[in-house]
Length: 185
Length: 185
DNA sequence: ACCTCCAATATGAGCGGTCGTCTCCGTACC
DNA sequence: GGTACGGAGACGACCGCTCATATTGGAGGT
Image (cartoon, rainbow over all chains, first blue to last red; front, side, top):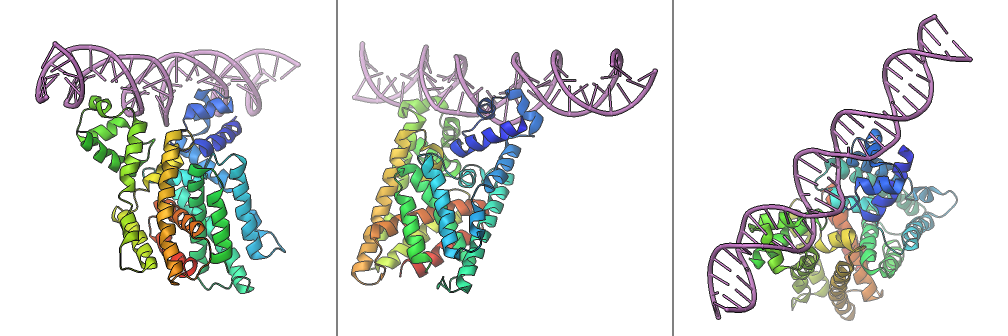
């Protein structure tokens, strides 16, 4: 039953964000009674932290570590997988980390810490890939890998924000064009 | 009194976003009774549209049109002004457009349309500046100016998302470094 | 094999509070 | 006298959360 709640919360937090997603919405879509929620989670906030961990495991970070593929190709595949996930649902939901950062980071310290850690791990995985590319000369840029990684991650999150308003794929297309043809060369 | 409500809503929407900002919070911080709200606005949603217009006028787009300054310098001043606004309040609030896009674009069509239009005007102002720079050869990049503009705008919005979690200025710094040293050259 | 008992979980009613919105009446001004 | 606004309060719905009451399942004793 706990697993049903987590599965449903994963979907609903992803779709509606933190504030617009009530406990009742989660339990209803999980098919469990509302009263059962607090048998398994201390609070909605605590559930959100669990969901962030779970969500992090689906961010295709494994693609960045695929052996025998060129680093920049892996990076492209990484973002393509993320883009496909969002395009598949008609650009109708954002990134859980971005949602939580925008909605809750300012007034819920634990959520802010969770988002910060998630972005940190993600940026580090990208930076490691970029360092590989710099070492094998496939990336000529001498910009600091951590700075590049943070910039790319943020540019991606912003592309999601833009796509949620436009829903036409243009922001994602601009990201791939500029990131891989100009930033990463 | 209408003006008081608009001023307060400008501040509160900016700080808390759409969902976490109630009508009572707005009227309280405006110092007007809650009952007066609907004498001046059809709904909270209608107020949000007014606020988006007002907010657009404070986005320092005028800086992009300052005469006798090099186009890329104007662009840098534009983003520096935006960054200063956010740094001044301890990175404790986002961009109204980004907030609304994340929180409300999916389920409130009028808000989505407003955000889309706002991002469109903003991107066009940046693109015009970039075209100027391409024509006077201060920008060597042959990438399409509209694509570049959309990418930069989204990268900026993403930097705000990252900064709201980290609050250390690193995302803004990465934006200025990569955008002006790598993307725009 | 069977009963007893206890801890853990299931469950929905309901807590105090807030949500966006509306009603109603008093007042002010043309 | 009519229209527009000021302002108190309350509407039904929902918020996150609690609690008293069922229901369950397995351990321990005989």
